[in-house]
Image (tube, rainbow, N blue to C red):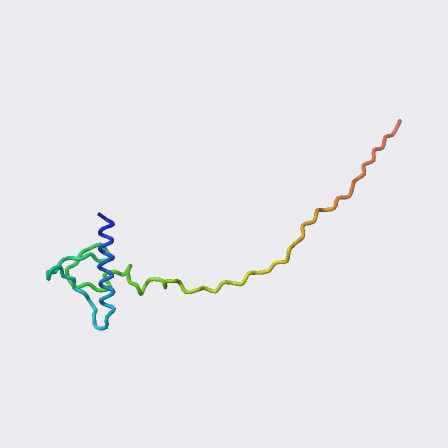
Length: 102
């Protein structure tokens, strides 16, 4: 199951990042009942050797944006003067007709 595999990859990465966050720890070997086994890396492959942060570049907390995001400067609202809508004045047009006889 893909989602289960992804969850395991993220869980292993979390252990690796937590352990390597301790001064002097560069890699982590995970054992189950004292035995080595293969663990998923960030690229989907498995490895039995000790895992490092480099195995999970997409999950590295140092490459993630700050949370919560740092506030950004928001421009102050611009004040605009209200513009009154006026109807165009209309001047009546008088039409004259002339009739000529003849």
